[in-house]
Length: 103
Image (cartoon, rainbow, N blue to C red; front, side, top):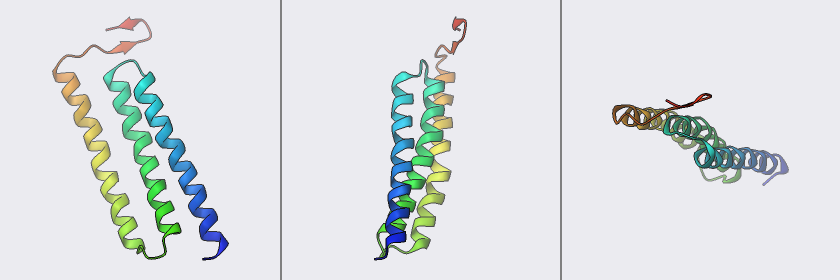
């Protein structure tokens, strides 16, 4: 294995880890379900995409069409799940947070 795929895999894995960490911190620190779902939907999608790219660069036996298929699947399912999470919170009339306090 040459040096360039290892560097690209390490960079993608580091970026993916960063976004996963941001998603975890967002779930813990944000005040309400709507903000938490937003953090989970955006950061987790980017984190998984970069980790799948790192897998494609690091493991030579994995075909790129499978990596692309996994990325497409994540782009479809994670935002939809985040939206449904917010929809359930809205229908159960969970309070929202604003700069003035809880609504």
